[in-house]
Length: 298
Length: 240
Image (cartoon, one colour):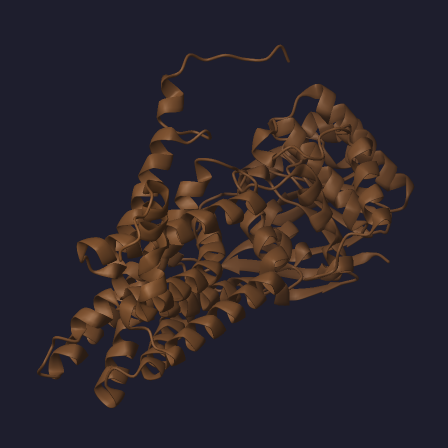
């Protein structure tokens, strides 16, 4: 005998049953949840330091490392992660070092090294005949996360939160007044290179789940959305994590019910929230500018 | 402890910006560094602050870790969302380091510093809501928090109204009473004549150093203007 469900019960069933019925949906949600905690706070600093496009460059720069790992060990996730982190760190270190010791600005040196790196990556991937798996590297496969990968994501995110907690203060000082830390030496270097390291490990975590091209979206979009609602740093971090996690949930639902590829579905969902924030945000949103101006007495 | 600069030369691409400079700055001295654009004033300040480490000659009696440096406002990212209290508490960096929390006494010191620069009640304002003068006051408060023996000020009174200028001059005089060494780069000769006891007139080389009255003479200023700003592309090597 079939039990008739009420409308609200049906709704609840619609909203949570994919995650109850299917282990791969649960894993996907846990994976994206974990990534949000690691990547989004780093994304906030990236947008505040005007490094969004540097991050995008880094996301491409990890490709040859992943490609070499793929040639050696196939689609082993640990291999891909190690390869990605290695390539990312080499490019970050080279570009960071060149911009510090020469007159080249950071964006130019990053662009130079990431283009070289990206071209190498494409060359290496094309050396192997069957290219179907390229799709996984570029767009990830969050619906195929196994336990090992989940552990890897959790370790990367925990490490990221831990390092960010240590670097939090020097990073803020470096953002506001980069000269200030320079005379005290070590802290300034730690903030600069430590932040690049954080970017790389979070991009790699994102790339395992969402793919190289999508991983940067998880860092930039929630941070951008949040800036249209709040302005203090603490609030930015809280709101953007909420935006990120909701985006992951909505994206996975879209992916489940409409059979969409999950990585892009997640990024499009977060992106939609970002555009809505641009339109309706209380802190500089577009609609706000249409309202009549008013002011206090003092 | 006095600061001894001996035969200091700082070059960019081998062209000297500061050339064979020797000077002694005594503890407790308030020194204004003046000179035309391109005279090497900021370069000299950056060497003293430890930002420039490649130079010829020697500097004794100053340790970059024990220097409070007030940057020009253009060097700051004013849009970064931090409050005035957070900004000035970064002056405690040497004490609290990466992870130390602020004790109640330290927060009280911050509040006292804000009061000293006339910013009481501003502690929770984001820095992007401050006027230029208010931001300058909070940077002075940060120098107060740093509480160092040597204080370096880079163009502290650019685009500042007279009220702020008067208030912040009182803060500097307070430092002088505590026997701090104050070295200040500025363009404002009138201010220097009215306030700073000693000055250095710089035009790559030191034209004159001593009491402001004896340094800022018409003859010295004319000499300073004659030093060419442009590099000589075919210059021979300086071997003196």
